[in-house]
Image (cartoon, rainbow, N blue to C red):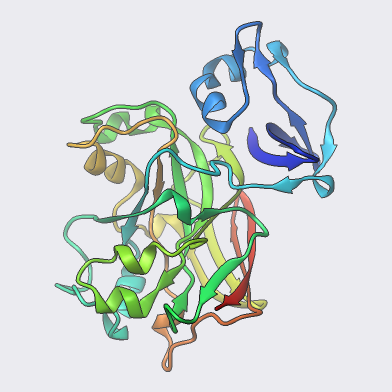
Length: 294
């Protein structure tokens, strides 16, 4: 299933995407209303097992709705993983923007977070505040959406806790990332986490073999496969949940491949008017324009 959060007229809804349309969801049976993506995640076994009990309206063409981030305002920070593709780890260390380099490929996952306020949707603007950064960069990433919470989740059980997958652009201010000892400020600018266009449920795709590509103004910059991850998804879930309880609706961005702007010589950072397009096989396309702000 492809599940989207969208705005139609003055109404924000969740729905199932198929054949170029979205069909709104309303409730499971007579009990649980489905007004947000978190409602769907928490009721997913019922939704998937008894689709005839989902009451919804007529399909609406996607051209007639505004796609929002699947989780427009996550309850908690987005959990992100750095240097999780070998070639990107190498290019990042060469770039001079990694103030915490201790070796090219990490021995354990490098985890940081982005606040909920960074999240924006497909088609929304990536804001470039020139008074804050002169080095805004793109990072195409596969993101995991947790469906079943838990703590101390083993690698072997990790798949049972995954609801689905979406696309994230981990937009990064490289100058802030380099200036501060931790990465948070460089990763936390408003609108720096485009997400979408929807969530594809885990039963639909093999997340271990997805092609990840990113274009800037139709120039292909990133092209890799999730089979190249240094730490696979099960390892990430196990590592993060070892001492931190994961909750339904939590999002884990799994890392970006080589080809980011900082990896070029000279660097090729984003500027106003750029269009960033990310495509992950089996999921879809996430496109966002870059707009300079004062």
